[in-house]
Structure formats: structure tokens, C-alpha cells
Length: 473
Image 1 (cartoon, rainbow, N blue to C red):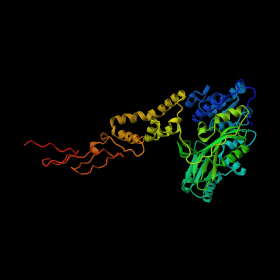
Image 2: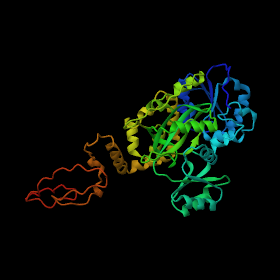
Image 3: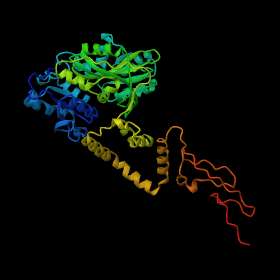
Image 4: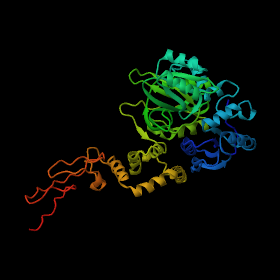
């Protein structure tokens, strides 16, 4: 079982071990800092989230999870007694540590007991399904498959559409919806390699996530929310959270804790059918996720929960049983990244105006905001600069998009006005005096000015709607 060191040099020294740019590290380090911890980070070079001001010491090594774990061993041999808590941040680090779980230096601090089956349970979808089904946890109907023939037979029994899941995956990658046998065969041959996979029933309902803190297997703080918008994968990380309450969540967490003995942050993904009230578990995550800082919106405080646990006085915090409309949060940087990469100009305009989740931007952490801006520019500049050059040459399409995006900022019911300058004369068909003005290609209605009645001496109107001059006699 993981052990909290009893005589560290600093009462709340915490080491985070990350293998990638998980945005949850920003929120996790802030929660730990406010709980009275001094946070150190071991991570690859170039990880932009490492710049958060809540990390006191940064040790940047290698380029990925394998090299980080390799560097972790000598670091703990020298400084392991300094840390009160050692936290693997992401799935890549967890998988690499599970692969090396028989090495003696891991046993004293890993989130679960390495001498049991629990390590495989927290990284393997197949093992988690088998263990939770045996424990009586409500799981989406699934079958373990190893070959294509087994997968096809399982899908026929369950009924299409089905979900095909790789045993090891993260952030929604490795999860595929199959609407037919042909789709299943193609995806299975391409996506399922040496390990077994799952064929899972596709259930109607709302997908969500439960985030929790466990004290040696006992859940002491948790909250649940729907995830109506995800990015970049259809079943990936959430960009929007809408909080919810379900009475069965506590019992499910208790069973997960009993089976796994997990210590630290964890939780599960679920699907909820509002018509029947049924809550089915999809998979587990044995790490912190990106919504910990939103606890107060659900009536819980992860900062207080961590502080109490480290002081040896844990108290159970249960979320609010909501009545009516529940809080909804657009998350940063997840939804901002989605809007940039999808070129969703309306969402970007709402972000810039402060109407779309600006309260979730960590303005109090300028270091990480500068790092985020640099990362975004490096990622987008290769495509943005050529686009800007094209827009300078041909500005009208961009002006139409900007005008459409700006209308999303108007109060509900306000009249939308499109600048006449956005319409191209070449795209406006000829008309005669008194004829209706055809709608432009833009989705915004043009401003239509009344035309003066033609003079008896005037000829036909011009193609731009201005009557020709009267010739001198």
C-alpha cells in the first residue's frame, strides 16, 4: 500500500510526475498549493503546463514517460524521504510504472498495492470491467474479445451500434463507435493489436465523469458532471462541464476503493439515462482530472479535503443534491483550444468578450498564461500566417465570418445588422427599380434602404440600384 512519509523535511512536500502536457496538472498543482503543499515537478522538457506558478521546483528530463520514470528512480533514491506524497499525473506515467511494478523502489508510494492485481486494474479497461462486474458495480454491457471472430460474435449478441475499446488508451483515443459489421471489422484489424479489447453496448444517455479523492481506498470527496462537449476525440477530454448529482455515485466509489485500495485522486466515466435514472460505469481513471478546481460549484472543496487528509483528519464531503438547473462551466484551455483548432469564430468571439468561460481562465497564474500563448502560437502559426496573407489579398470572406461571429455577442432578440461594405458588388445580381433586393450570400440580413421613386425622365436603374443622371436637353 502507498505510504505517506512520517518524517519529511517539509510537512507537505509533494512530487508530481508527468509524461505529457496534461492540462489537469495546472489545476492539480493549484489545489495542492492552496492546501499547504510545496509542489515539485518531474516532467519532460518542453511541457508548457510546467510553467505554472504553483510548481516551486521543476526537474525537466527526457522526452516522454519512459525517460521520466527512468529519471525518477535515482531521484527518489536520493530524495524520496523528502516527499509527503508522490503523484503520477497521467496515464502514460501510470502505465510505465505498472510495467515496472516488480521493482522494489515503487512499492512504498504507488497509488495502489503493487503486490496485488490492482495495478493492472487501474490501467486496463478489460481488467477493470472484470473486477467491477464481480464486485456488483453497474457496468455497461461488455464482452472481452481477442480475435476478430470473437468481436463480430459479441457485437451480434449485443446489437449494433457497439463501442470497440482498446485495453490501453487515454483521453478518448482507443474508443470507436461501430454502426455495422463492416465498420467493426475494419476498425478491429486496424486498432486492436496484441492485447484483448472490449465490445461494449452503445447506450443512450448523457456521458459524464466523477472526480474523487480517496484516502487508502475510502472516498472522502467527490463530484460528478456531464461532459456535453469533448475535444479532440469524440469520446475524449471535456470542454464543457454541467454538474449533476446521482445517489448511487457514493456506493460505486466505495466499491472501487474496496477493490483497488487506491490512495489519491481517481474516478470514473459514466453514462446516465435520465429517463430510467440508471447510471452505468464505462471506465476508470486513477489520476487527477481537469475539474478539481470547480469543486465549490458542486458543493465540495478538494483543497480542504487534501489538507485534512495530509493532517491525518480526513472528513467526508458529499456533493450537493441539485434541484433544477445545474451549474455549467466552459473550461479553459480545453474549449479555447477546440475553438481555435475548429476555427469556431463564434466561440472565439465569446471567449474574447468574456462571455464564454472567462471566469475559468487562470488570470492569477501569468506564467502559465504566457506559456500557453507561446504554445498556441507555435502550433498555429504555420497555418495562420499563410491564411492571414490570403485574407489580406481577399478580405471579404473573412469580414463575413467576423460579422457572423460578432452577432453571437448581441443580446438575445437584438436585430443583426450586416455592414453593406461586406457585400461584393460583383456578387449582387442586377435589379430594376422597385424590385426586391436579393439576400446576399452572408447569413446576415443586409441593411435595405428605400429606393426613391423613379422620375418620368429617368431611364432604367443601373445594376447597382442608382438611377442614371438626367441628360441635358
